[in-house]
Image (cartoon, rainbow, N blue to C red; front, side, top):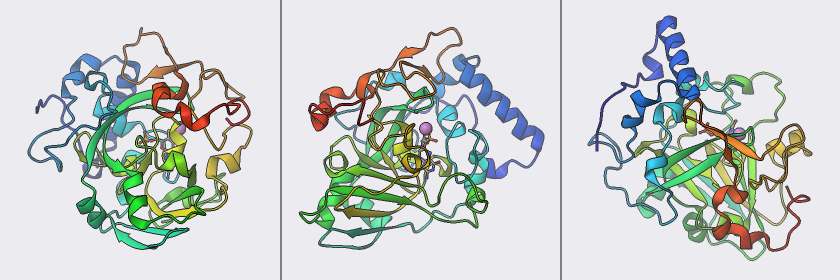
Length: 319
Ligand SMILES: Nc1nc2c(c(=O)[nH]1)N[C@H]1C(S)=C(S)[C@@H](COP(=O)(O)O)O[C@H]1N2
Ligand SMILES: [Mo]
């Protein structure tokens, strides 16, 4: 299905600052829901012949396609602290990150450590479409059709050793193209995240290389990012270059920055508030201006699939 309503302007082609300001206004309006009727029909995941993956199979856990967030929103309202601390500037700034010939270094407690070409990995693990809810710890949410493959498939390939209990993910360190890595910002670079091994091999956990049927926009984490849909968005680390299997839990970026605010687990949970705000509800981006906030669901609605991972763990303690 191809329906052309709004024409996306590649950020790299925007020269006139007025045009840029205009786009910001559109995004702001979109977020407020004001322009929604004009763009909702442009939502299509498996788009036309020019898209990279025209015939994607849907993963069994995909949620309803009718709920998709307009792509203009997902691509222009991002959190990418290596580039910017606001939601808009990374759309343009991230275009400076070179993402061709991406390689993933896999190491630690594995039988087959090494540097793996992303394209080679994709030849072995055909991407599928995963339509997931996505909930940021800040209290907004979206529904995104990712293109990716289960992280478990890659881990199986490198053969974890029995000592592997955690998986650490490291994002790219590229101060030449990432302006906030050049200043003494609040965060330590590179951005680091981690999962317990059973979380990492859960079938919902994917490495994403695309969205809306096409390659991943740079501002959304190209060339490859993690997506863990039952956890707050900050766990879904972008631009991953290294994956290490470890015996012990590593320190992670946000947990290290503010341990009382951002836990290691970061499972979406409406009954465990952030110290500075409630997590009881969320604003679904693109929903109408008068649409009430949605109630946030435990594990972002994926409890049936993942609750068993946490048994009778005290979720207030392990937030
Ligand atoms: N490398 C890196 N990954 C990151 C972030 C970041 O700043 N740097 N932000 C995180 C946060 S807070 C969120 S909510 C999601 C946002 O993903 P999106 O911008 O594609 O919606 O990415 C996460 N992954
Ligand atoms: Mo976030």
